[in-house]
Length: 409
Image (cartoon, rainbow, N blue to C red; front, side, top):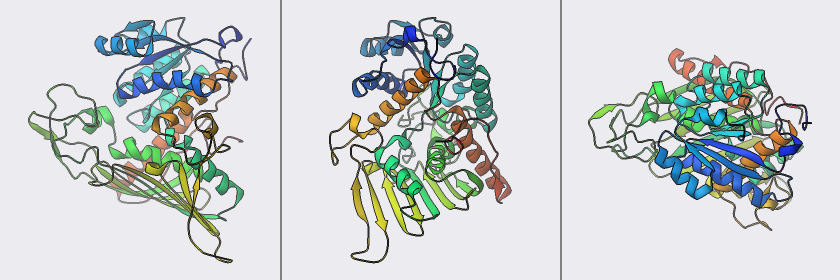
């Protein structure tokens, strides 16, 4: 017997004990492992427990360290062993971008529901193939679009849907970061087209495009430009993977963009401005969303993720923005804090993400952002890249599957 619509849900015999496998135990893999465990603490009423079954990493030392921290029962250097393990019910794919495609296709072929980080593939073609493989295998998926889980943004989405700001006219989304602002930062795989695909378009603006889809609707057309401000970087002493690795080797060419600016049109007539940088000096993680409508506007900044600025109407009293704090009733806030003004953090957003993925698997219903959502964001990245080459407006490819902007609820 299965839950929901038979989309590879976990059987009733395993409801209280879902076996987890995590592939690649760097920063994000360890965060996935913590998030599974934290989901049990913050959502104790769910009829589910997780069993940390297996950790896979090409570095056995990394897997063994994760085993000691998270209590994995098994470790392996070969991720394929996780996919054939009958005790593993769900899989997290947290490897570098260039490995996502191979691993996701293998997980789908093995019939394992998987939670994958973004960007899903290093190209639109890879992202489409991942989404179609998951659909053919009828497996539940999750994609790492964690910012949409901020309770303040969930509240903003309700205000938009209710018409509080009137008809939405335009949006501005900026993802400005400094993690690559030091020219001495190592040229890791993130700066190579063959292993990362796009630069800041895929790394940061895939989040921005997803937030546009989540809050407003489908992006249908774009006009973009990109720039690479630090054109050479030192090679790492070894195969470093972190955003923040230092280099000590000879200089090599950066192959993808440091900065992107994108004008966009949405299916519903809304216009958008999207910008991202990984070399901004000053902003650390200044990820902002601004929604403007005929009757008001809403602003959100990840650096103050527990609040939004809301302005509604022009008559009857002082005119300007009011700070509205997330509180119980906004998204999953009540599972973390008892009252407004008490902060949640980045890791909490990933815990919500883990919970959504596990709940999707249990119910056999796609509640978490799906691989179709990942494909949709990749389609905007691809259109932006094509626009840069053609120096013109480019249509965004349509996608199939259950996405935020086409599901019924």
